[in-house]
Image (tube, rainbow, N blue to C red):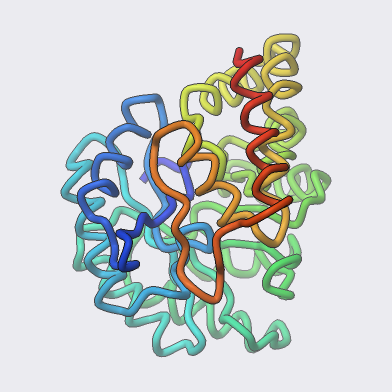
Length: 295
């Protein structure tokens, strides 16, 4: 597992009856990698993992593994209400052929460090798979601060990366100062990628990449090689779309963008509902403006 480059947090496509569309999902995985992405992360928040049954999660992972074969790794998002269920998902992901895990704190319950460390440690101990800790205090109310991340690094040899989504770019420098090359830092906030890359992030778990993979890769590559002028030109064009990744209806918005460019549909599972009225028209206008000025 190489935790670098642009790795999409891939959406889960649905048929009209809201069953998983495995045929399109396989093609989407392949299209993203063909356009320069270095793997996919399935079953995350953007992948609506919370709405999938255990059996559906297993089928999604197997579809991705078969679709990508040896061309790129598949990372499984591990999130559940309980530690036991999270461990079960991690073990299933290993059996399904995944190359890595994205480890989340438990849904709903926000515990103290002792409890969150025990939860994460149980998942990391469940398999030998290379793992990435997901730090998103905005969404999950659990903040893995750099000193706690270091504690986990010292105790778990298979913890290799962190998806840093605190929206505080200073965390990148803080983690680099403490962990050095021991930890790969990946940005998990779409409209912070340029700043994070310039601060030393080596990867991007991206959202709008589901619709614009080539542009996402071009932006990231320009940023990490220090071509600031090129990176900023792409970023300035991309920002209105990237900001869709940072609002409560990010799943609906990103799937709508996919539909607007002809790479997917806008269907989501309840409790989410598709956009309507002014919200829909405003989002379509942003997409239309971006397409008209496409770099």
